[in-house]
Image (cartoon, rainbow, N blue to C red; front, top):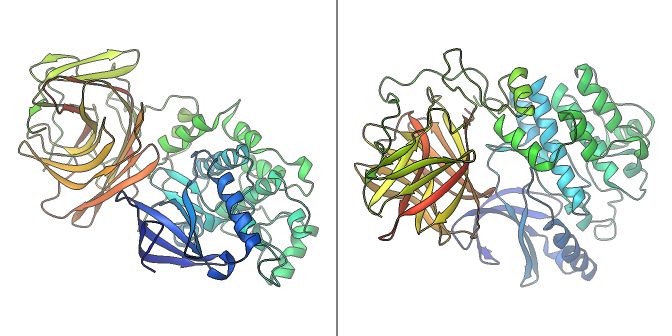
Length: 514
């Protein structure tokens, strides 16, 4: 089977109790993960009823730190489930290859997974099988996958399978076969964080019966966790489900005060960076200072490191809302959060006009011009950056988005574009002309777009990835004279004889994973 439900299966990613997992191309040209269920399951009427019910519930889960369910169906007697493709290793692999994180690094992971559980529970879903291999580490932060899917396979469907879930991370009531509540997921959260922080299974190894006995009768081994995290994990892993905190309470304890999933997600994404200070600008492609207003307008045709925060001080600043870090000289360093009042060009030129509006940045590009503006950054790390911005088309028609690896002298750069008509693309700008590297692909139209772009160095090539409203829409690789580290910023370009105006509400830059 090469195509199912309109999704072209590209390669196998893995196999499990439910079936085979494939990387696939969507009908619009993007990437997704397709789980093709074992045919014998799909032939069971009881399974079909559970499948429809659980998929409908899973699709109600908000996107906060999850890999959402995009589509599902049964074609020619074969059931399939489509989820968002998340690029990155799972937590088990990362701990195995790189060792456990600690301190503020572990807290960032804990916040992300708790945020996902909050979104899952708010939709009336229980994960039932939260474990390190179901936590993927994407360029945007941790993503929890397979929520609610364990419910699809039960002891009646597969004879002899009496207990669902992964023994090492099961709650005592799950071991005893009692009805489950969201508290079982909170217990598993504690086990996952204990594993991530120590590199050990919370109840040790051995046969499944031995592990299950310890879960019911003994406490987890939390030696090695710092005092604060250990206290939170201990409460999460209480034997009595009624004594465990909710996912909301976990967020409150980790962040401090009342926190919403949206706030927690922003904290995780803005502090999800590699360690170490960014290197100085490359002498081969220096970053020119921001010139006069409009001087950047260009005419033209319409071993891997943990992706954690650099340290406790950065995380503390992020949690307090101060997400822009500055060097002693006053030049923004990474991670960078835009204050559009600080050194962003304001004024009018032949290419158009830039202005501030209530903490946002307005670009009005004139017909026949591409108006692009630079963030006042001191340099880009050699491994690359992740740029994100919230943008809205206010007036006119055209494309807009973010760019990276830009040269203020030549105008060369990589652009990540969305149009008002609902198309997205990745392009390379050189000598006043654009080459499309990926797309255009159709995307869901929205009043506001969250554009995220990763420009990463991989040997002799630059890999480019684009997300739109948290969904991966495309990837490309530039192997022909790829650009070196440079500037980053925003741009707008009309496609008619009238100006286009775009409002950028935010702009963030952080290092890409090495």
